[in-house]
Length: 341
Image (cartoon, rainbow, N blue to C red; front, side, top):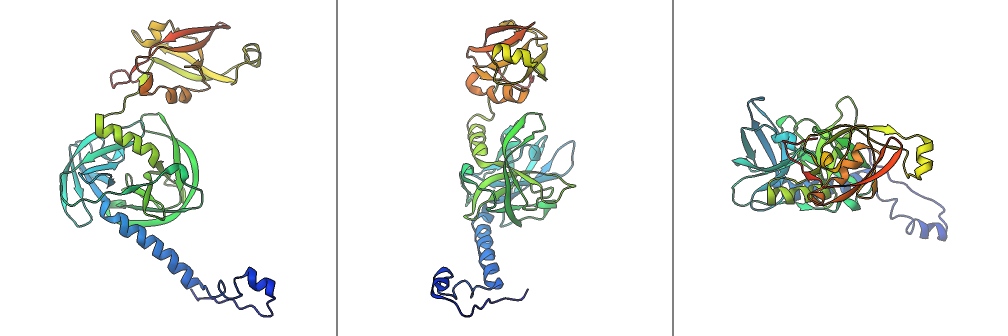
């Protein structure tokens, strides 16, 4: 690309003031502008590369798989995707300097597609984590990972959109997903998405293969919370009430009669035996319109409210039963693999 210099003639004094004495911006050619961008990307890579790892996974279902991850502490804790390490029989982590170490799983959370693994190694360098609430659409986004096993591969683009939602493999809706056009491929999963300061703003998690430039990352503020709990407890505690349901529209007459804020709710299809819902008196055919005094328009709204803070606490549950509005007290139980509803 040829460098271009713009020259202005017959510039008035006011124009000279506007354009920085006439020549400051004119002297910046394409090469210099591109070089400034390159220096930014190179600085990001130099800062974060020692902390990005390649993860090789051996399991009964897949002889060899893997992805990427990054060190979040100097004592060997690595953040990655849950689907990267799912079903792993053996894990091997390779650092930038080609050192390899076996890894153990500290904890996984399929609901947010995040996991923490750990290695025992000296001289480790962790990343810096940003505040993803301060991300803006259009800012530079840099992805580092191991697509198709090619370690320390760097791609760059911008933050294309914020506040996206997508479903984890468990079916739970994940909120605050970052969309980027920084190219991602299989193997990038679990690697960091970075801002121009070399701070992690997201965990790369998915790509829509037929599309061009539609890639997604889990916001780092979500990952901070999940990683801290996984390191401390090895799991994320959530609550559940023991129902299966479906989203249904509410008639305008019902909405007006009860002055409801939403025109949809959750129809209870089944109630598990000996569950919190059964103990509270919930029945099949009931329509849940609020939980803990928060309106419920869809199953995803209920999932968002069923946090660890609700375990063992009595909260109000409002339902419509044959046109009658009922309020009952329900005590959510802790979510486990044995009670996955």
